[in-house]
Image (cartoon, rainbow, N blue to C red; front, side, top):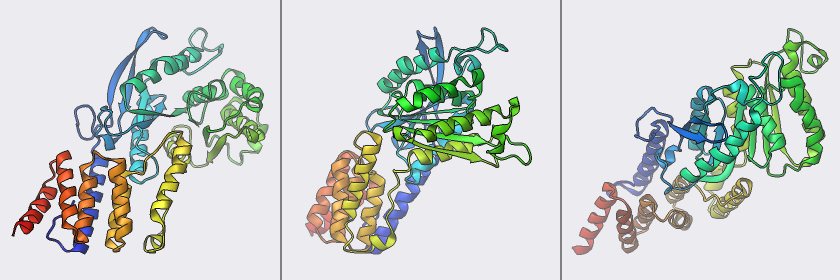
Length: 417
């Protein structure tokens, strides 16, 4: 939207500027149920018959949906996050930053608050904690049979799900990856406690990994620096003390993953030399989500945009076809992205391309007033006042926009003279 009486170049610049300002401002004022600024989400309770208790969860709905749970602005992938109290705010901040930067789709975040993390995130037994550990299978059953169905029934979700955990949470993620690989599309283990129960999960991996097909699945492992002075990731594997058991168990697990590359798993790990067990969470979460969504960013060079022969619409559609294949469902080209590209084409006087892009948006987002306002701006610039009036009227039937109303009234006044 822009003021009608500005010149073409000024109009285009203002529209682009307004789009950027609005996009950035909404990205930093996170709205929850009460649209309260500086709030990353809201809390709900889910009754669990499996666990025989009420469970607290924290939920973040994408800023692009106004922070609301109404299913009228598209559906979103979901991140399920263990140890929600510690990890929720950082993951929400990361995912919103990546969304604004065009690095991932808008995503719902569900933070699961642990009531007894040692009990809920472990399987097997431990002589140091008799009777207080090992309910991990029941807890994952709660996630699978109660929490995920509740989130899918209540919120605008898609089928794409990510599971993230740190420390004992990383252990739970790894156990789920091995024993229930169908449950999530992507798994993220941040310095996971794979030493637990005499490295039980690592020993199971040696048997399970050669037999599984992980096509369409993604795994990211982050390792913190637990080495003594003079050690490296090779020499530490010769150590037998308990102080290095976590990193050694992860390195062995990584070796088994590498030995079974034919199972089609999309896998990456990273050793963070400058981070310890607590600090690896934040950087590991960011790097993991960048890897999970490394297919999402649309890369187009300025030289291509300035080239009249460059088939921008074909590149855009091919890109989102690939994104759809990776996500497992149809992903439409992002409305704001297409809108901004359309105005860039308008500024470059590539009017046919601009019209194609703006029309693509009206097809994909028929209830968006801004899409019709933008198409009206194109016709205004090219002198087709009849079509400009038609599209401004359509925009105003969807939303009362002062700028659109002003442009429409001025055009109608001109026609009546």
